[in-house]
Image 1: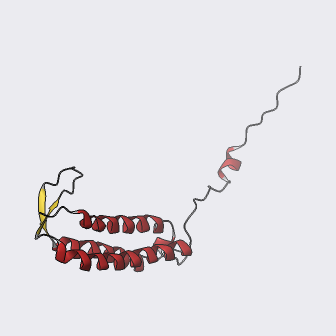
Image 2: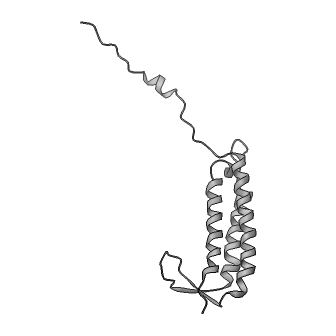
Image 3: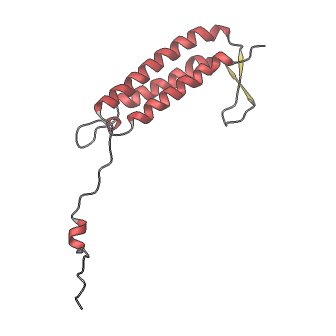
Length: 134
């Protein structure tokens, strides 16, 4: 009867394998995210100038996900708060720190998230066009 060969690898050889790298977004992804933020900011300012005069003085608001608005806020929120959030995203993206390779941290995986967040903020402001007026 023949002996079975051991096919087990030694611990030294298994730890020598490099860890798989995660895909990261490129500089092009960063540029696209920056354009999404800038175009979203322009769209928000245009929407604010269009809708602001037509809004009532107090707007019903519900920020905790409730179906029925439970709070009233001033109409300046539509004019200033949403573009303000977009400006914060722009500043964070422009002045994000650099990593060891000299790339901004926004170029290593966060650009897609920021672009999606910019689109969500723009969509939230666009909801002002659907406010029921008395």
